[in-house]
Structures are given as structure tokens and as C-alpha cells.
Amino acid sequence: MRHSDKVTLRTGVEISRLSLGTAAIGGLYTSVSDEDCTETILTAVDNGINFIDTAPHYGKGTSERRIGRALAGRDRSTFVISTKIGRLLVPSTTDIDDFFMDADNTVERKFDFSASGVRQSLEGSLERLGMDSVEVLFIHDPDENADAAIIEAYPELDRMRSEGIIKAIGVGMNQCETPTRVIKETDIDMVLIAGRYSLLDQRALIELLPTALERNVDIIAAGVFNSGILANPVKGATYDYVPASDELLAKAVRIREVLDGHQVSLTSAALQFPLRHPAVKSVLVGCRSAAEVKTNIEAFNTPIENKVWDDLVSVL
Picture 1: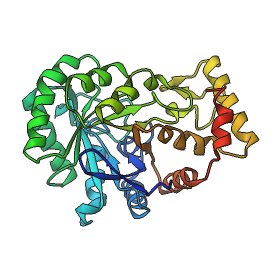
Picture 2: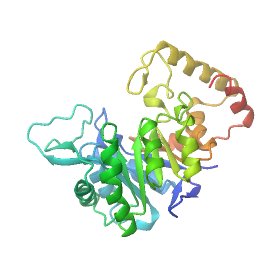
Picture 3: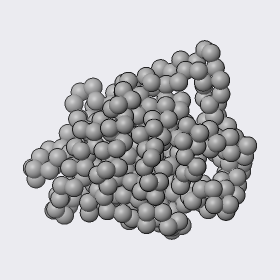
Picture 4: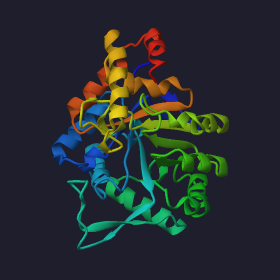
């Protein structure tokens, strides 16, 4: 399997096996220049990565605007865009973003999973993207708003899908319980699950992935490096955006040691592991430079023999 191989989702949309996440394009933790963002996006697209995920949350609209500028004039049929609903951007004169260094601080986020909020959110996203449509809308992080997401947001998204405004409905989260519930109680098409199906964390195996297979729901696996520890498991490495425990760090080191014995990089294994499950259709990885895109493509395309995965079983 190569990074640019396409898979057809249940809605008929075709996406690449390796996809581009764009929180970093919004300046997550580190500022990124407009030029570097454009180069990152175009390097991905020009090398066969056709699925790009964004959200109003990422830099309070900055990620969406940068994607729109980078792809302006490109053939719209050559790439697939997903964005998210659940956080409206409303005017503010006081909000300062502590996480997205390139955030638009003339607005602030307001959780809104209402039907009107869904429409308003998409309208804002399309304006920032400079596009007439997106293929996928994810319900974003409805952790404390699961009922509203199911009762209010989903029916409006379903109407939009029926009207042809969008092609697919999803939910994007970093926990498994709510997405599993949404699959059972609605007719969503996709789940974007961050950090819960990786070499280090397979909680999605308990119920989310089996339920997705049963209901023919496509899974996009994100956060496959668990926020850093699987990129470089050293003291101080982060897991879920906080310093990893000694226990998790020791497990990550054991995984790396097994892979070192086969001369396989931890990056390659982390990128390829989720796709070994039949429910997972693509791996979504954030990049902040063209060099990172190329490094991830090379790692994704490096062959890994079955014996390597067999030897990892006892560690995982």
C-alpha cells in the first residue's frame, strides 16, 4: 500500500490512504509563515495526498483561510476537504489564543451544536476557504454536548447531505465512547478518531472499531504519534499533549527496540499500523512544512514485513 493509493468511502468519495491534518497550519504551538503553509499544502497535493482536514478551531479560522489561498485556482475535483462544526467564531476584542500562535484574535470560539449553528458554521468555513462546498462535515469534540450533537446537529447535517450540500457526515474526537454512541444512534458516514488507535493506545478496538465495521462507518485514524511520544520516545516526550508517564515511555521504548531489531523506523510503523484494521480507511497526519510531508510519505511507503508486526504483538 502506498500513500497515494485511493480508497472509496461508503459515500463514493475517494481519498488517499495518507491524509493531511492542518492544526499546525493554524499555528498550533508554533507560528508558521503563510509561505511555508502554502508549500506544505501544495507538496501534499502534488504528491498524491488528496484529503485535507481542517476546522474553524484551528487558529480560529487561520487554517481554513490558508488552505483556501493555497488551493485557489486548483481543479476542485483533485482534492477532498473536510471541516467541522460545533465551534462558531464570533467577534471578540479580548480573546487571546494560548495554543494557536497564528490565531485570529478578533474572534473567539463559541460552542454551538444547534441546527442554525451548523448552517452558520459551514457558511463561515466556506467563506474562509473560498470554496462553494466541502465534501465532509465533522461534528467536532461534542464531549459535553453529545445529546445536542445527536438531537440537534445531526438532523441538520442529514438534511444537508440529502440536499447535496455535503457528501458525508462524521464525528471527530479523541475519545471512543461518544463516537460509538453516535454511530449507534445516527446514520453517520465517518469517524475521525485521534490518538485512540495507535501503536501505543488501542482503546478503539474495544467497541468503536467493531461497531464501525458492523455499521459500515469509515474510520480516519489521526494522532498516530500520540502527540509526540511515538515520534521520539525520550524523557519529556508528550502523550495527549502532557508529559508522558514513565510507564508509557517505557512501553514506547520497548516498541522502538523491537522495530530497531528489524531495522524499521518507529515513524513508519506508527503511520502504517492503523491501516492494518479493516475499518480504518486513511491515516491523517499533521505537517507544518514540505519537508515533514515528504518525510511522512517516505516513512509510509517503506515496506514492513508481517514478521515485524508478529513480533510487536507481545509488546502492544
